[in-house]
Image (tube, rainbow, N blue to C red; front, side, top):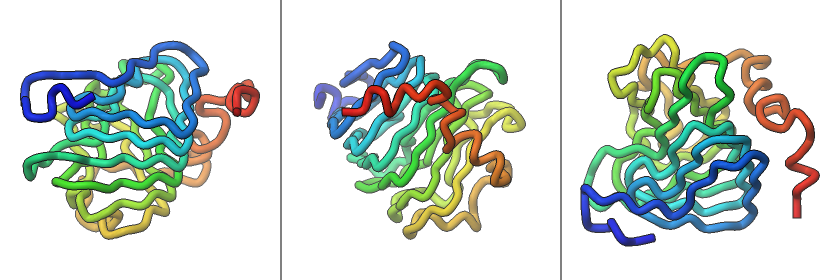
Length: 196
């Protein structure tokens, strides 16, 4: 959806996903601001292309993105944000987990900003081009003690964590397993059951 490509005010969502156990394979989501509303439920995205310039993956869902490309088409220097996650409390299910993904495109981008104070976003074994700003993350003035932002085993010029925000989480192996393993959003094996 290119409706708002030149407007800083208009929002034109390409898709809203709010059902449970929704999966997407080899799909393209194109927009500029707020491209993909990953609103609520458990979701799985595989080999998808998601393109935008501002908060282009946002919502409060518990979603895994595997082998996807996040492509920024930011038309000014920014910086802007790939994600805006809105987990509402500590016990609510939710988080965006990016596994073996590619972050590409133009502009300067934060990995994510906290839409709520329990915002949860993780990057695992992903490629980050040089558009990722050194700080990595934006608290959006929320209490950082509740935010879970983490990355591990990533590569590329944007993956250098030496200047990341000091409140980025450093999870143990068991901590990572809770997000990259099936217990995060696939406890009942629904992803394989619905695979094409």
